[in-house]
Image 1: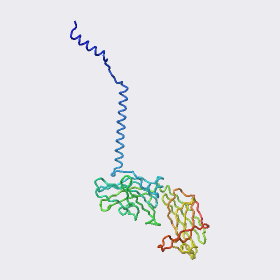
Image 2 (image 1 turned 120 degrees about the vertical axis):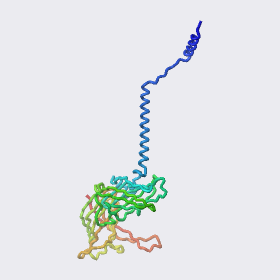
Image 3 (image 1 turned 90 degrees about the vertical axis):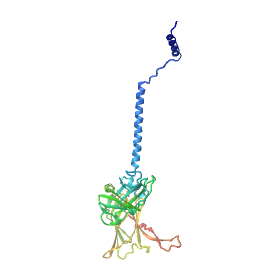
Image 4 (image 1 turned 135 degrees about the vertical axis):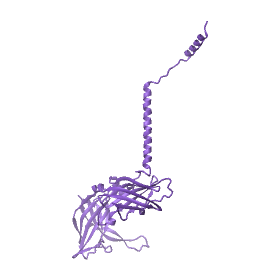
Length: 348
């Protein structure tokens, strides 16, 4: 006779036989690999978060924001940016919900060029745009004269930016050059109707531009018709080329007279490939010495992208040009080359 316990055991055994029990054990190797993967994903996630925070932090108007190099957007300054002659400074000042950053600076013997970025906080209601008249420049505490540029426009990223340009030749045509090293102070007292005070001090140097500047002293003289041209110096800086030359002629010579078709009125300068650097009108004040008169020139041209091997000088005379406007009563002229008077100097 079976006891109730025996019946319970038989019932349980029949269930076990119908559906065997399976013990699932995760291999230790899998656990280790999975743990490593979890750690890697955690590290990757942390890195992504860090990168996002860095990007947000970098674009903050209260910190440094290297989003746009405005000097690259101007064809005149593009080549000096591509040659690595611009110094990135990224310094700024904030006040009244307005931040001004100076991001890039170029300095040579005669020129200071810098780009500026203007941003506002979300809470700023009055958002006037910076302009030339708002900006003051100082060298070692001494205020500079007139500068140009500074009209701020909307940038692709929604901020505002502009270029400030100063040329020492406007203040000192034949005077001292910019120092080799100095403290440049960019100061803004008022923007529109907003008074706040923004001051940015930048230590700058001519080192990069000086290294890239070429100086030639050919001291070459050429006789063209009844006058002599003497080229004494050629300075090719990254931004501008300066040519010093003199024109000497008899005192009664009519050179520079646009209305005299036999007179040489202009002097065009090209490189050996025919790329025109510029044209000089020969109408400068003459200095008399005996029966000779002399005109002295220091002319400024935009530096060509490729360093020239030769400079070609092309004397030109005036040719009248008919105006297509019937109401235009002024006389118009164009320069026509005098082929037989061309000469060149070698730059070595």
